[in-house]
Image 1 (cartoon, rainbow, N blue to C red):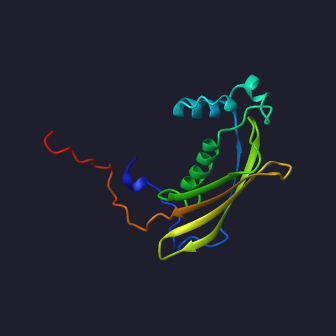
Image 2 (tube, rainbow, N blue to C red):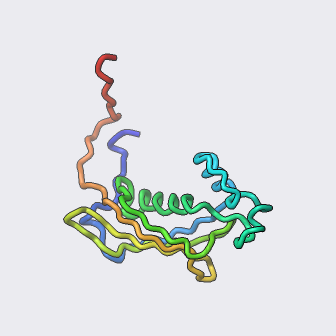
Length: 162
């Protein structure tokens, strides 16, 4: 991708309190298996039906870090968008999220600190019945306003001595 084709998200002066985003995610088994494979996490609570039936959950649950990934990726993609950076994340899993659940996440900009370039985003994750499963707060550095050079390709400098 050429540098000129990179799209940058909303800068601090383009974001407003109350800006929002709604995203619906289905936590499919393939997503959970990808997470477990990437992290080498072998917690039986996330995958083993026999084991999980003996717990208070009665079925496998979605790993909390997978939920966090959904939250941070939507910040990176949409609000504020590309070029943003999550600097703090607080997540409360209010109720367990089970495999194959459909969860709707509502993101709302609650505070803007223009001096520090930070945006505070509150997130609620709910199922169709309205039951709240997740509450989160993300503090995000908004993308910087910049003029990207109109070059055809990014030039990567060679290491000295090669």
